[in-house]
Length: 226
Ligand code: SAH
Image (cartoon, rainbow, N blue to C red):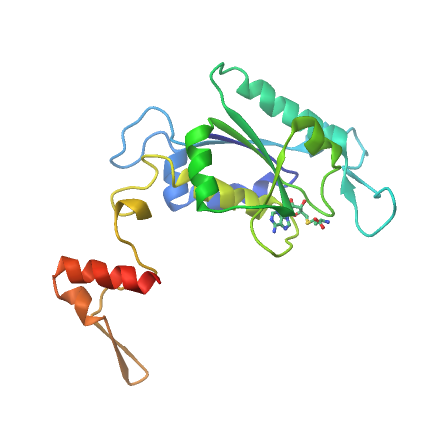
């Protein structure tokens, strides 16, 4: 999977993409995983790089109102650049997503479908009051929301989608991690010690988890999920 991220703040992604499971998926080969190509790739396109000297990336909104709107031309150029790179692969299946608090709500089902259906996903991260709406019309971008709250930018939503879609790609989760549908997971999990002492109180691991009885353990896990 290749993610193409359109953002005026590409550095916001740096540390997150280096760490843990996503960091590993982005490296061609790490630890026991011997492969020539990484499982996921991330490319950035910065609309600021299409601004002429002293030209602003944003402008006042038509019709008045607060804040600033990101100008269409520099976003169009960035998206075109991504599409050109993608078109080098004749079998590419592309999806273009724009982030908006009033878009369709993102969920695991959406992540699963996207991981299966597409080879390239363009994620458009806005800032301020958002991007001039004509950009989304031109490229038929789908508006996606990650929840009912308003953030200052689309960089966190882009990371949320990247993370959630990537863990649906075969091989991204390793031996210690695995997808929910392949095992019985639970929201309540425990590790050592068996008895945790905190402020004179003992906090014990539920007995059933120490029982060795797999049927009972599965039943408990299913119950704890409800
Ligand atoms: N004026 C806009 C809000 C802009 S928030 C409106 O009322 O819809 C600035 C940017 O942050 C958006 O362009 C989008 O990229 C991102 N954003 C904020 N909240 C978001 C959310 N809940 N889901 C997805 N993207 C969000």
